[in-house]
Image (tube, rainbow, N blue to C red; front, top):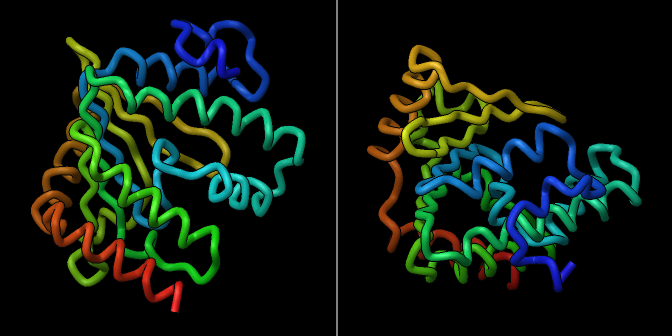
Length: 200
């Protein structure tokens, strides 16, 4: 996997753990100039540590063998953020910071590290400020010139929207969430405070 991490189009090679939907998402991510994630309850996939992702997949009843193949694909997806040609913005609900174990503490440390990357912005939306529509579902907005595509997450699948009439409501939600999200500095402080409380 490490030898082919930089290979273009690796998701087209019938990789284990890659459904057609996953391959489509990776293709959009690979071509996007900007990716914006909204996740009210969990850390978004592109920022998840492998242990964090594994724990949720196993809790969801996915077989251990399938989990490991999915994690391989996830690791390759995460590598997209190390390239300088994409701007990544993550808006997280404050609930995503809550946990009480080493896995979650390590995940918050990884969030803080990611926020130090020049092309990554992480902002927290406090629970008391969260718009009602923001609580509905996680989604990702991908600016893939000349189009904008929205990926809406469901339990074990997702949907892609590219028609302006369907994309527009999600863009309005992002605008509203951005208005009430903490600044990058305050978000970093909130992440570290939550991590430090777990370590006490």
